Image 1 (tube, rainbow, N blue to C red):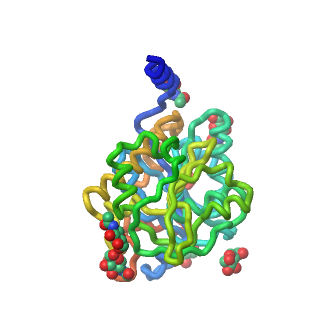
Image 2: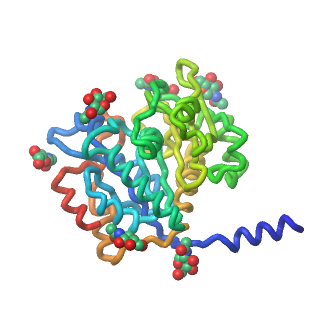
Image 3: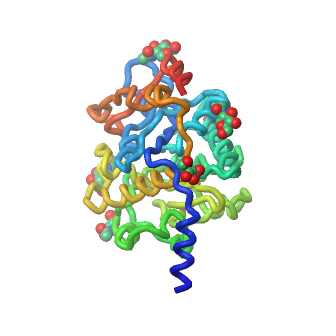
Amino acid sequence: MFKIVVILLSYASVNYGIDTPIIGILSEETYIVQHLFPEHYDSYITASYVKYIESAGGRVVPVWIGQSEEYYRRVINYTNGILFPGGGTYFNETKGYGKAAKQIYQIALEANKKGIYYPIWGCCLGMQVLPFAQLGVDIRVDCLLKNTSVPLNFKKTSSKSRLFSNAPKNILELLSSQNLTFNEHRYCLTQTVLKKNGILNDWQILATNEDVNKLKFISAMESVNYPIYGVQFHPEKNPFEFEKKGVPHSKEAVDVSLYFASFFVEESKKNNNTFPSEELEKKSLIYNYNPRYTGISVKSPYEQVYIFNRTDFSAAQLL
Ligand SMILES: *[C@@H]1O[C@H](CO)[C@@H](O)[C@H](O)[C@H]1NC(C)=O
Ligand SMILES: *[C@@H]1O[C@H](CO)[C@@H](O)[C@H](O)[C@H]1NC(C)=O
Ligand SMILES: *[C@@H]1O[C@H](CO)[C@@H](O)[C@H](O)[C@H]1NC(C)=O
Ligand SMILES: *[C@@H]1O[C@H](CO)[C@@H](O)[C@H](O)[C@H]1NC(C)=O
Ligand SMILES: *[C@@H]1O[C@H](CO)[C@@H](O)[C@H](O)[C@H]1NC(C)=O
Ligand SMILES: *[C@@H]1O[C@H](CO)[C@@H](O)[C@H](O)[C@H]1NC(C)=O
């Protein structure tokens, strides 16, 4: 009886925001896709991250690197959450991904401290950039696991986490027993390196795996105090990427992808952030851009990418 009352109270205290969330996806330098294009470009977004958010009922706006703090403040004010994608770049570039992630992270933290529930999803490189965004130091360690799907080794803490505590039992069973989380990385985060840099208490480690050299790395973590999540694996690839042959595509693989997409999109519904006008919203959405089919080339890591140049950045004024 007591239990039921508590549950009712906790539901009553949830403030639901909107049910038409818009998620920003941060672009990044073109290092790993520039070879696919004859002309020079400045930044790109892998299309599977866009489809991933859309698969769970979210819409996407591209977020440019190299912009002013004012721009990133508008991004946070107008969107309901942000996704830091994977890929490959350095964090130390003057107008790059690392700098933008750091600015966005700090502004998102401010918003959360003011009571605006603003979530961040970091995937692979986007997870590795979270401590950089927090500390301003690149603390990643070398760690090799490519083209490999593995089951998650859940930590006990995961059962009380936001990310997994409400997951359907069959999803947790699949994740812990089948090869459904695809890894493609040469850096990672470890418990040791978080501890060494004094931030272990800020993060709850939820699952781990081992690289080819048996180094135990963090596969999933969440911030203790804020709605910030990091996964080292690639849930967005399961339904949408076919270039890397190790990506799983079974029904179960698609189901777990949708679990993560849906989790994050639902998190983003918990604030009321919105664009100041519908016109500005429409002009800012990813629908204004066309993805390019890069998978036609054998050298492409992705099926499709959105590729941008400085000239597109004038569109940044839209946001
Ligand atoms: C969002 O706005 C609705 C309607 O004004 C309100 O009921 C709700 O409490 C707000 N939620 C948040 C998280 O601010
Ligand atoms: C992108 O901008 C650079 C410098 O402004 C220019 O050299 C390049 O040709 C542009 N690329 C495309 C595809 O327009
Ligand atoms: C963002 O919203 C806050 C209050 O909600 C406001 O004070 C601030 O001026 C806004 N910033 C931008 C850049 O729109
Ligand atoms: C960024 O880091 C990389 C790798 O550590 C290094 O090679 C490069 O020179 C650095 N670039 C800048 C602009 O500091
Ligand atoms: C997962 O992959 C490993 C390595 O390829 C294999 O040995 C194992 O049988 C697979 N597990 C399942 C449940 O398919
Ligand atoms: C990736 O893994 C798949 C299945 O495990 C395998 O068939 C394929 O050859 C691998 N590709 C590379 C480039 O290692």
